[in-house]
Length: 317
Ligand SMILES: [Zn+2]
Image (cartoon, rainbow, N blue to C red; front, side, top):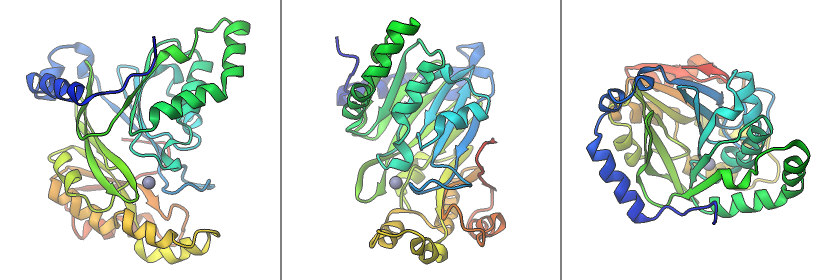
């Protein structure tokens, strides 16, 4: 039997029907004492773009509730960032990929394999756009020698049957368990399509991740009334300096401007959605010391009256 499953439109609709029956996080919380525990949000890595840097890492975020780990994006180094945050790798249960740019997915296979090497022996569900299924299959094929060796030599459980892939092609309900309800919206990140934002309704609060997008009305609808909106942010005036540091990328400036959200617009999105807190993450540029935290905050503050946080790697919110 294949370890991989494709989530059909019917599955989405069935999921949506389930969600109607359990319409609020509070209703969920009433079902289980575990649901009342605080949900940890750890900003594992907060820089935008695929280059490795001394400072901010490539994008990754963790939600932990009741010692169960939900990982949102898997930029390079995510497993080490988890260890640095004292999050046990075998707690990995769900992986969500917003879109297939390498600064969001480069360590997708690696973090699962490193969790397995650290003792994982239970199911992992992975959610994201196509070709996630093919990527997963090829990753395991590429690493079959090591996987098979460790099974035979170290007595580990087979890894491949643990991983169940669900390709997302439509917005709407994604999944729900006894701790969290997850929904997705399509965002606009040309030329990458589909690209998703995710909303996590946890028992104690709601958290939305923008993924990569330009200013998005779909995201505003998804984030309506959320406690936290983790939004990507671009400092437009620094783009020329950024592009000058990256050789061999003639049209990079156009991509950055067309496909991302200025910090001012991130403030506007937060205000339009009525969120309590705006968390600026996936910062572009991620390594320009002339753009200070206070500059990021002031630019968003001009358009948003709620709390504003400039994320740093390892920050817990
Ligand atoms: Zn992207």
